[in-house]
Length: 68
Image (cartoon, rainbow, N blue to C red; front, side, top):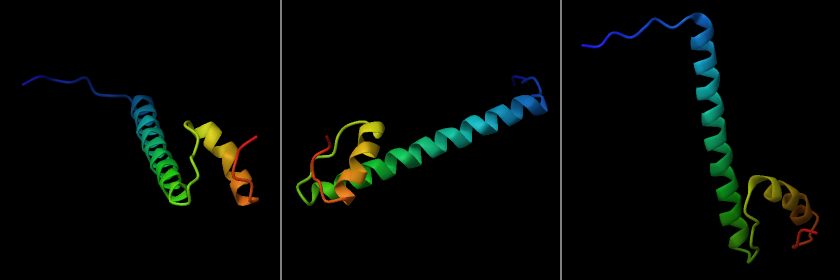
């Protein structure tokens, strides 16, 4: 059996923050893919990348299908 060093409270806090951030990124990716799938049903090709998708969303909501 291997023994592991006890983590300090700061180390545990940092690890918890990393886990939370990782989960939030997974959720963001899931939602972005869901949006791409939904607009794809209407014939809209969504851009790759979260930042370009964020820029395209307001255009779609205003009725413009192509991002400028």
